[in-house]
Image 1 (cartoon, rainbow, N blue to C red):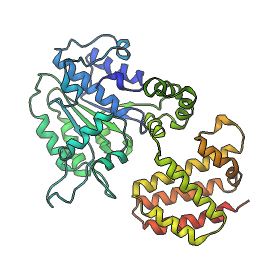
Image 2 (image 1 turned 180 degrees about the horizontal axis):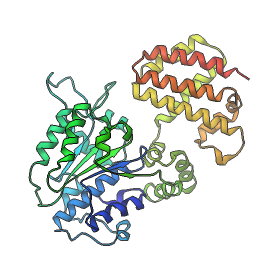
Image 3 (image 1 turned 90 degrees about the vertical axis):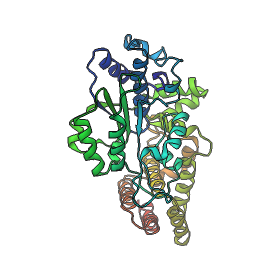
Image 4 (image 1 turned 90 degrees about the horizontal axis):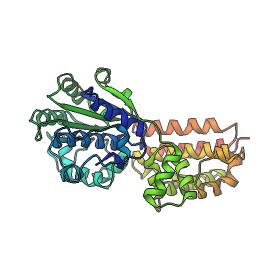
Amino acid sequence: MTFNEVIGQEEVRERLVQMVDEDRLPHAIMLCGPTGVGKKALATAFGCYLLSRNQSNGSVGGSPAMFADEPLVPSEHPMLKKLEHPDLHFTYPTIKLPSMGSDHQPVSDDFAREWHEVMMQGPYFSMDEWMTAIGAENQQAIITAGESDELVRKLSLKSSQGGYKVSIIWLPERMNIACANKLLKLIEEPPSQTVFLMVCEEPDRLLETIRSRVQRVDVKLLPTETIAKALVERRGVDEGQATRIARLANGSWMKALQELQVGTENEQFLDLFISLMRLAYQRKVKELRKWSDTMAAFGREKQKRFLDFFLRMVRESFMYNFQNPDLCYMTQKEEDFARNFARFINETNVIPLYDLANRASRDIGQNANAKIVFFDFALQVIVLLIQK
């Protein structure tokens, strides 16, 4: 993978490569930022760049200005193109499958085939998409202590090319405490010429001792113009649609890609949102019970995503009342519904609705009974929707 495949983030690219050119590359870097802005893509491209220097005996260099236009991984390096280089190691959250023994701690290698397939489709994918790829249902994916043991074993081996060894850790905040403590020791005493590249979305969940031993690089939201341009140039989207999608993406290339998909999850969520609001307005408690059963059938992660969608629609509906298009970020279907619905979201109920959805999301995250949570949620919406 090359930097050419990363959407935007030129400033971070230049900063990373400058560290190498100036011979001040830290042994542990943590890329932090929101979902979908390109952290995993940056880490993978930078890892390939470091390993391409191994194979070119350090001759791949040049000024940072080159990197937006020139491929950084030469065509004669097929292992890097296929992400199958022996010195490139990926670590990511996993689950325990029923087929695994009771004493087996899942490690990344157990899901190497699935990881490779997903990565070759593109590095812009979410935790939920990864969970689907490995056949997870309601399990919580974590990085186990067994993974840190595997890393110690792999990184203790000599580099196959006599240069860097790169360890890319996706979502280190999902390490259990045993794994985190072992990784801390590994970072404190890293094997020779090993570079750790962590891709983190919630750094506050990491041990403070780990955070203090890595160099943090913040990856910002992508500008709307950057996303729109990439949609036109890379996906063949017309400029009008690209602009609308880019605004909806809110700085995330991954969200922009999701909006392009036919029959996206958001369309399903919109139908559920419309159904909820109509049934609540009509006070049809029996039908709302069926609605809550439908929601309860989803996995926890999907339930939380719906509640995030609910929050966004409440916000957008409230802003729609100001009749300023620059303040609203909705698809055409969402806007068509908001045209008649927005007047029901006002100064009296917008904050309580927000609080209601946040409480429901917290309860779902704490493994509360989803049927009870969503039925109570629907009943509370009745009360709040009729407030004037």
